[in-house]
Length: 79
Image (tube, rainbow, N blue to C red; front, side):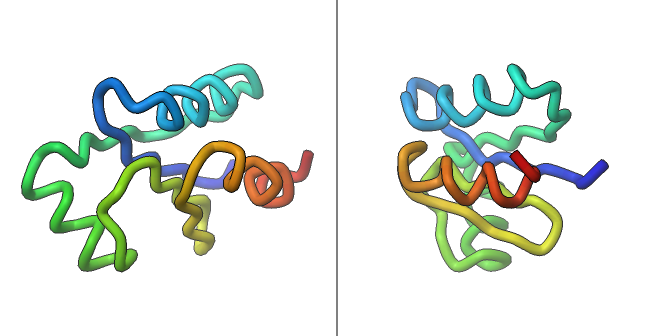
């Protein structure tokens, strides 16, 4: 199984949608809160963005709204 890392922020509807998408498909993921300064800096330094949601699947980095990410999530997860 591919490792999935999800950067989220509380109250973010797109973050909640990505989490639901992964949960419904039984995809385990690690979640990190970008409202914590150290996590925001980690996201910025590793992926060049600090606005949630950021979904990291293996070597693929997806960001933007859930609608933007969904086709790429489908492709990355083999749906």
